[in-house]
Length: 275
Image (cartoon, rainbow, N blue to C red):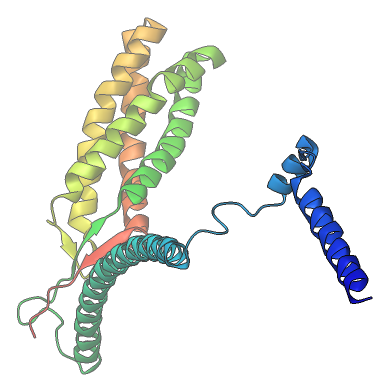
């Protein structure tokens, strides 16, 4: 019995070892992964920049921060320079306005002092300055010249009409010298304005008014005589027109000058301070 059982055990052991050896010797079939799965796997892998070392990412971030800070600093410097230029510009304007203000204050103080001295009964310009000097503006001279030309032209028209008996002749005589005489009188006013002779207490004296009337009438007689003779072709008629103008207009201009002497418009007084 023992031999039979030993034989059975030995046979089972032999069969088991053969099965194990057979399983190991059987070649396994080869397995190849589909290409679509490879591509899908690769597509799901993170980018190289995402898996780059931590130190490399930190250095890149620091570089970007430093560049941004440099750009901000350059922009701030440019803005500061622009603000500095504006500050310098307004400082110069402030200095100019301050100088003008100081000059205006100084002039104001002078006039206030002069007013106080005048109110106290003292002479503004000091001793020997009782006659206040002045000059006439260009606008005053222009208005005087044009107004006188209208008055004198009206007189010349009526005298010409009386001696010629012709409306057209009278109008021609007046129109021929209207603007020329106005311009001549304006120039004469500006020239005489440069002289202060005959001016007293802020107005033209009687002697100055008379001298101006005579000087102007001398020129006007020659002008009227010439133009009347050229237009009327009659020397006798031209002499009558110019002669009647000479007598009447000389007196008329004297009173015209006296009236303007009382008008303050267009006068510029020159005040000398002796403080």
